[in-house]
Image (cartoon, rainbow, N blue to C red; front, side, top):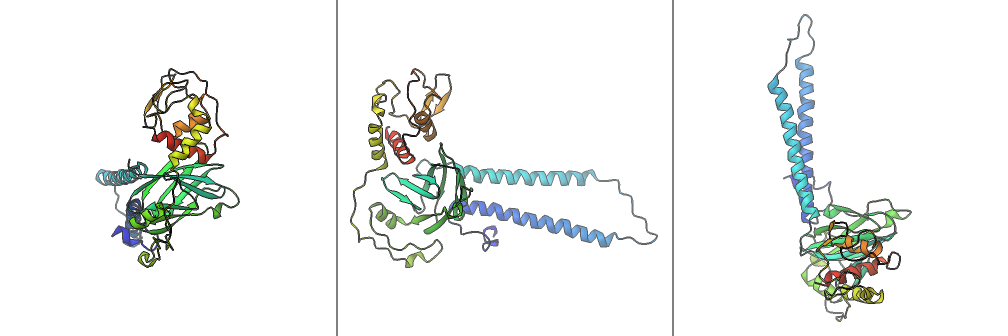
Length: 334
């Protein structure tokens, strides 16, 4: 009932997390209406029930500890319940499944670029599989942006010099609008993109570079869209990890690091991603995307235990597209 009560006032529910957020939102609306009616109705009742009459003296009321306990306990329990509900949805929204399909997103005044594991790159459109978790790993080339998909009820700041992420499972096929929700300059309002959710057949065709035809807006009659899945031949594509391997070699990473476990001047990159790495000062860090990026751009910030701080900075020498490819290659070195 809650999900349908305000169906006309909220965007399309295009993901599973949207349903959860809308349930909480609608509960808060109905709770507010209930207490509004209770409080205002009580006020109106008291105005007439206890209005002044000549010669009538109001009864002296000393108070009630029971009533005081009620109006302290009920709001407290409601607040704790709302917090628990909200935290549960937030936690599920921020913890991406381990098998989520990863897409790298780069924000730049004033457009969005998307990179895929199969080596493809798209601008202004991100293609995702339907009913499968998708994780966006995002960064910015210039200023602060914010990636917002109203239909999915998700929003995440995109910050230059670091990676942030957000995930979703698209449940409605078609095109979903993306906005930048952080003012980023003159054409901020025009920094738009589309998330295009494809069914299994279309997803396979898109990965094989076959023509899809017209894709309707989400919520339209998806079955009536024309999708030519046989007109184009399959095109060979270099994966993102293979692109990263080329960057790894051309930037001279092999001079100091190995990919087979051999120790050189610097630590090996085999099995690095996701592992725990001890620093010279005793700290233990998890080797995620931000860890690798920091060691490429600011290698003196944290020195791995057992190695000398001799690596030069590559900040400004590797662009965001190359950085995403390089990290994808290091992640593949298991």
